[in-house]
Image (cartoon, rainbow, N blue to C red):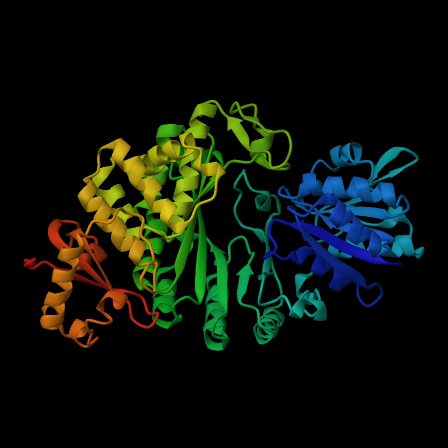
Length: 583
């Protein structure tokens, strides 16, 4: 039998762990070909490629981000190759499998839940060594009737073979994200999450996981992301893995974890701050909401005070970037409450703050309770909500406006000095800045067109001038610093209008050449001459001291910004505030 295991990833850099577990579990009796695509690939191209592999069986891994596109592939593939057997699995079809059999008759079998053993049993059935009715945990049709079999016992994860030892994956390890799991299940019961449905946490073999990580690093993996729902649920286990990764990591490899912030013990953070190399680890922390009633309704136990302590301690350590998540649209969290949630979380200044919107996933408690909370939502994946009893669609749109500029102006770290000043000194709250700017951004149609670096500055400048709250001399000075900080060589053009008369620039340059120690011994050590001073410096008026701006102090201080560019290094900012004699 020719067996193909396929999926449509959200992006090329992603890899699918599930189909690799299926492939490894089916060996050595059955060898499968892996075929990964993206949701952006043309359907015809995908179908053509699959067809040319002459498969007898194709298994698809389905999720909310790819199910609709995958259905198109399945229907086309079945038309051009009617005899191919289509097996569908994954979280999107595990629940309401009767609905999926009815909606997509081209699917021959749906795997319910954990798929490794079930998939191999299916292959036995298609090979003629077993009957389909004996396969554990499937939904299928027989004599135009839907049939279902009960799932078997949970797998012993300690005995699963490695999903990483395939030669065809080696060439891509350095180019894509490698996903790894050391446990399955979640100890919590959050009603918006599928992970809460599986009771308890099961662990893989620790030594085998370590061997896999060694193998991945030795073969060039650069980003390894742990998909455990709560990596730090066991403190001793997390500490053992952190120590292992610190001891044996290969320089250039980064490890990402989903952790629960309020159960992270201070001594663990102290250990990481003292021992982890900077940039080795990255934490993703799901905050979702700081509204106590909302958290109670979704059965999410969370101590925000302890979570804040964790985030603050990690940030103060300066070793680990943190990505915090929020969900808009949870029960009883209206617009004002979400604004408060956003501001409380943003106050911790995470390196990234991800703003998401509630999706009523099949199988979750909130989907079952949708009517109770007045939810209206899209009836196709990803099932995002329109509104509920306390949040209108107008409110959702306003919050969505926040999402785009939050990503561009905070998460991408393009204007850190400027944004910090605006959210701290100008707008009433951080949320108000992002929301109001986001709405302006949308009305201008900027969300539908691309942008260069300078566009981010000119568009913010346009908004602030129209808004009228900010001191533009201060704001534009900070924007100059942020813009020049992105250049390792003198920029050929800048986003602002030329603000230096030629004779004024010449006078400043001459003064610096006559006495370079005016800007300190460091500047003097550059030994600039009349021939190269203009090539290696950029001088512009500024209304703040760049040294103060670096530590968040913004006070008016009239002078000139002297930016020095040296051999492709990060630019050096100096403040020149002496009187200039113009001849």
